[in-house]
Image (cartoon, rainbow, N blue to C red; front, side):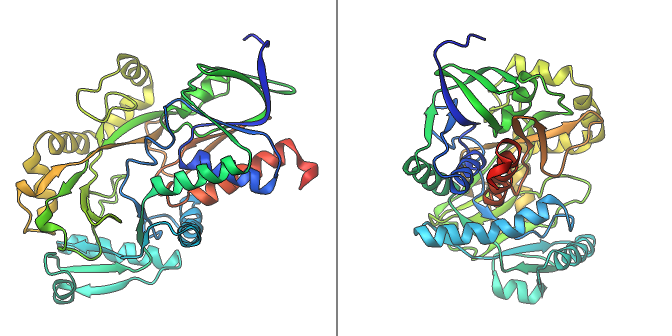
Length: 408
């Protein structure tokens, strides 16, 4: 690394998605006047996970009590609501119905309800008749209403954070892919495709590239990011008034994802999805998006093959559901039998950055890597968007404690 022509700053944040923006925003709220630079490799902010999602503000039904997921989700849902209301951003508390279609799912739904109670939620049970009366297009043997769930546009929130950061003096540099990192006793050197920097500290919120930055800095990395594409459809115009709440299936407790669901959007549409199919590129939004280097990185990681062996049945199912539209439709018809294949219209896919450990386990909670002058958000699974504000507060607080403890 060459030290000449380096711009100096207090903190470099890598990744201008919603978690990176929140981290920088909280840092400047706590330490006004700090020189903060956000580096984003794309031409604009929040183009990946922060923009390609369901727009759901989760209530915290699914998460183990006491986990970071549960804690951040509970705080995050209220923080998102307040943030949107204070700034006039779209926010609709429509609630969520988790629908059981079999007796086994009813039993699993009871377990979910018990967990939700431990997370401070009071779910409302509906029998088949009450469900049909509330949502005439939805069929099930029972359902639970989660009234705290809401929908937003996370791109709007990200843009609002971006605007406030600029007003607070932060610099946001786009088209700046990180090429090299080096931690020294007195700071961090950052080389990018759009300028080089010397910072007192660094925050890694690179999402799908998070593990690469951990390794680039020479830190031990106990995980790898494996990309899972979540494919969506938009329902046809005739379906726009079919549901009032989000409609979710009862998730299989042996699988890490929630199953394809129906979600109203703040623009009046309804999306269906996402599924979870292994992507062939870290930012592989289509089957034809293939990266030999990304595939090689997965192939040489033992945890990847252990993960595949442990989830081979689910993986094959997700792949077939992705390739055969009729199979995807059947998943939705289990609780919404009125849907036909022509109702499923194209909609942009997203890619989840799923951290996998060396034993092949999908890391289910938030995971951080620290060094003396850096903090890396290694795994930020759902509900990361819901929890983005408290995550950012945690990251900013931890970095300030590391770098400037005398200011606390």
